[in-house]
Image 1 (cartoon, one colour):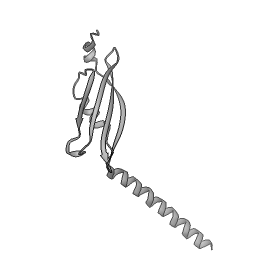
Image 2: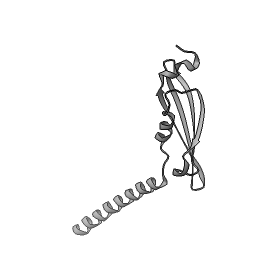
Image 3: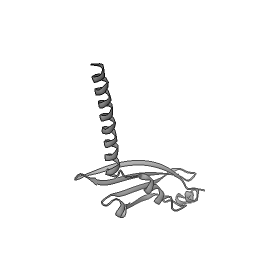
Image 4: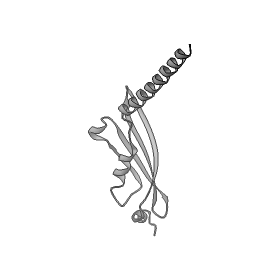
Length: 114
């Protein structure tokens, strides 16, 4: 009886590990959208202007698109960028949002500051 209890305990532990690994692998294969690619595109320039920009991810994520709304957060050149990413998955359109702060002191004069 003790040997069977140890055996089944080991089997259930192994099955739990396999289940966790399959869940992680499935999450990786779905290709979650990474906000860093949008942030890096916005960071290519030293100047930001308030307004809305949009784009897509090209062939790397077909059907996925992003919208970035930029607004002055503080008068010292700190901007808040709200990023919304939409992508199709299993016939539905999923959406995720994030906000980042970018410091661009060269952009302070956009609103007439300094």
